[in-house]
Image: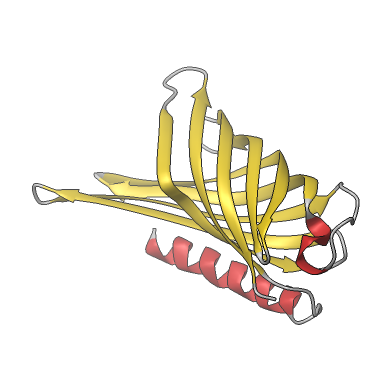
Length: 176
């Protein structure tokens, strides 16, 4: 489990570094709260407040950025430890007009297809891949701060294929 998570983190870090080297545009650092609603048999609902995951957006074009995203939850008590993790790579494409200069040129409506890996360890361990897409909106708040809202759908592959709906609300800070 740790090897898979470390491999996913290394791959995302490498992709993000390569993407950031190609553009002088600001990097977007973000933190998202989220609600995940499982669909079908044995579904679960997970609410993560104040943070479900950390993300970074590395521009690769005027409307496009690569977004690695990482989440880790560790629960420990009575001598037992349970860990869940997610590692994801998304491609955010802004649909809105470029009305705002600089960091705000990506404000407005966006779509975000993504691929990732999710896993857990505790009394046993497992990890599965997933793919999905989201539709969201960015709203400028201050000089380098924006709010971000997204609804997404994902399908998890592996034993017991599963579908889920995600609702995210986050803040984004732009490095310049």
